[in-house]
Length: 148
Image: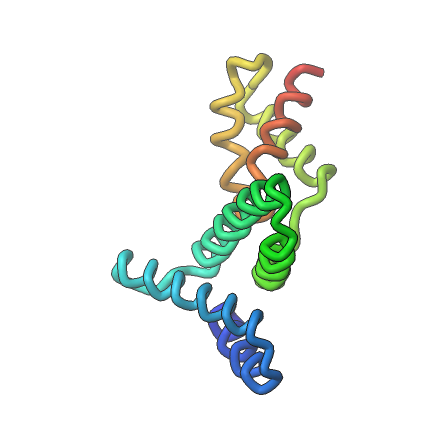
């Protein structure tokens, strides 16, 4: 079952359960997917939908930090709920060990040895971890691997 089908099923379930917060998040996500498809001119692939969800989660997490710093506990709880709902639709995240393995393979392939080579290393690594790991984490691990 694809993500779009899963969203439709979960939307129906949220309606029956009268879960307004989850229903709102699912509708927002379906709307985002629909808008992207209109802009693109055809249906999004599962990877493109995952990327869209990942970006939305990242955006919400960035906002979460701002709200926490402003002591807006009401908004913090709402955002945490939205993030939790969206993360249900993301593929499992890669562990640091799995990321290190991918980076090691990319180092062997690209011959990266210094910080100056980080660009070509990241160009090799990011397509393999897209939607499964945050770029900041991958970059930090890549720098550690090159420096060691």
